[in-house]
Amino acid sequence: MSLDLSDAEREFLARVTKFADEHVGPKAQIWEDERRMPVDALRAASKAGFAGLEVPETLGGFGGRFRLKVRVAEELSRHCFAFAFSLINHMGLAGKIARDAPEELARKYLPEMLSGDAIGCTALTEPGAGSDFSAITTSAKKVKGGWLLNGKKAWITNAAHADLMFLYAQTDPDAGWRGVAGFLVDGREDGVTRLPPFKIMGGHAIGAGGFVLEDHFVPDVRLMSLPGDGFKAAMAGVNAARTYVAAMCCGMTEAAITLAARYAANRTAFGGNIADFQGLRWQLADAQTDVEAARLLAYRATLSVESRENAELDAAHAKKFAARMADAHLPRIMQVMGAAGLRREYPLGRQIACARIANYVDGTTEIQNERIARALFKQAEKG
Ligand SMILES: Cc1cc2nc3c(=O)[nH]c(=O)nc-3n(C[C@H](O)[C@H](O)[C@H](O)COP(=O)(O)OP(=O)(O)OC[C@H]3O[C@@H](n4cnc5c(N)ncnc54)[C@H](O)[C@@H]3O)c2cc1C
Image (cartoon, rainbow, N blue to C red; front, side, top):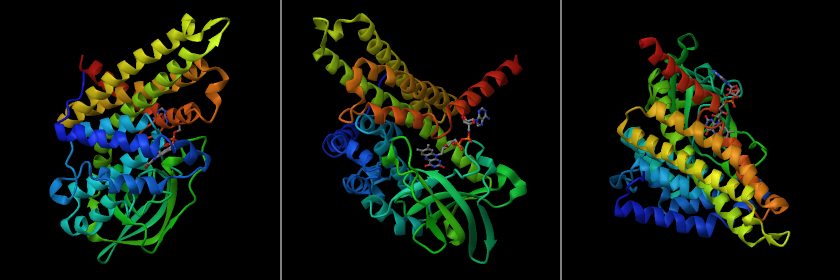
């Protein structure tokens, strides 16, 4: 199964690949050494037109389909999963503004998102609520002309530099998920404080961090998802996110396999080539088989997201399988390279950290299993 792209989409993907070859691959380890989110590269990628992938041409973007976003995420992840996730999150907010924001907001914010002068993020998670998203406590209180937001967001991709965020807050604590609404927040305005980004085991290019909101005023026009719709919108968006994360795991793991195969083909031991040891050959062969299977699931989910049919289940299968696959195979691929696999010249350490990250973002592996089990038992109850 492949994802057919139009000529224009193929050309877009080729430009992304060239950008990744020149500006991402050679820099990724330096960003990791410096434990920083490379906002300069993110702005350069935006200026190259990549932030507008989902934005219609009439609004200054490219107008690509979801399948192009998936392929871009997969290709970029061959070079740096963390940077890919950062760019994909940024382009996600640009696409959302183009799709859902009133015209005056789109006019104001889209140009700076597309140029990368403003960086975007999506903020659901809080220090006290991750998987249980309906338990968020950041509050939105109605006041004259708008809303006052108070609370704290944590583990937000791009938070290290983000200016604009699509932020979910609770308008009525007694209403549970029905009270959750979505706001476009401009972090450069009063009442928003950026927290220092998290120091993590790897993948710092993601720029994961948080914000504190203290009596932050948001005008009515920036309430983009009404109470109740906010939760549903977040859940619908998460199926797409799970799908591209699955494809990202494929790109990253396949790049590691290629690297290890090249290394093994040139390394000798006991008078022969280590690539001739069947145990090692089969490690890589097994990893490649699982990448192929994971990619099929990811591409199937891509078509389901595009057609809006069975997306929740297909995305859950794809993400669960791909994140586990990367997590399981990357240490074995590293083993093929012997101690050399540990060296910073090689990406395997970063990739292992990013495989761990893949098991958390956009719903943990356990939450995917819950989705799958729920569907399974619903079917069983029907007889
Ligand atoms: C690098 C990074 C970037 C991120 N980017 C963003 C972002 O841009 N925006 C954003 O909003 N969030 C983001 N997140 C947060 C991510 O979505 C959460 O980490 C995730 O939802 C899990 O929440 P948690 O970490 O609080 O774990 P918890 O919810 O506290 O879960 C702890 C453990 O319990 C398990 N668990 C929880 N509920 C169940 C259940 N019902 N059944 C079985 N097991 C369960 C979990 O799977 C996990 O193993 C990011 C996280 C990371 C690591």
